[in-house]
Image (tube, rainbow, N blue to C red; front, side):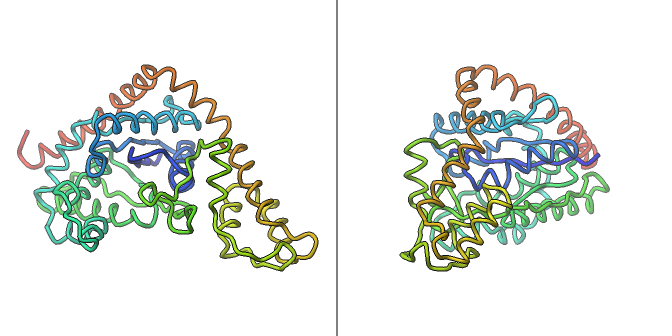
Length: 323
């Protein structure tokens, strides 16, 4: 049985990009094999500098997964910082990894190109991510396109360690999300840092107002339009059935009296959001009232994760002479 592993940073409220790019796939993969999902709070320290916010967002990510159907009986789910063996393995990987490899890291290069002074943590980020993967003998790591490099780094680092000390680590492979990129409210990639994200549990007037920001043009409903390339139809394709989408797309292409107006399409997006996330929204409210229960579930998941990571750590320690 394959073992899948991935993490999500608690750097903000989970948005549609998180849902379609990662969370939905994580829940589906739990039906295919062993699912290991963690909340990457150590990674978040490279950007989140307020302790209260980090604690709040960590719990928010946990609750969001649970509210949308994560079953802790069939999924190992934990906080990254609750499994210290991973940071030990990260150090071992760091001793065999070249500076040139890390200097090719996309995130690091992007920050330098923007004129920012990156922290040592940001530079070292790929090593910790490699340790996250390798520590749990993961077979596949579901990622978006921009994260493939991190899995390749993990392959390189595991190979470098094995070349020095003999076969020790399992080589992981990446699996690309079926929806690797979701455009934000402005048409750019959806991101918390860009201010163009839509929280999956948004509702009421706030939801309507956010969707109202989707860019459109001045063409009337009667004018024929090609849906491909239109942001509003891109969102509809994600949120409604293929049959309903095709019916709306056909009306848009034909135009005339049956051509859908932008107001109608935006209302359908709002109702589709309610259909998709209303049950999770209600369950989130219930879980928010029981934080101790959520913490208990995360601690139980961490105990299971530590068993696996400890065995990997001990195997690596023995290989390089520490045990």
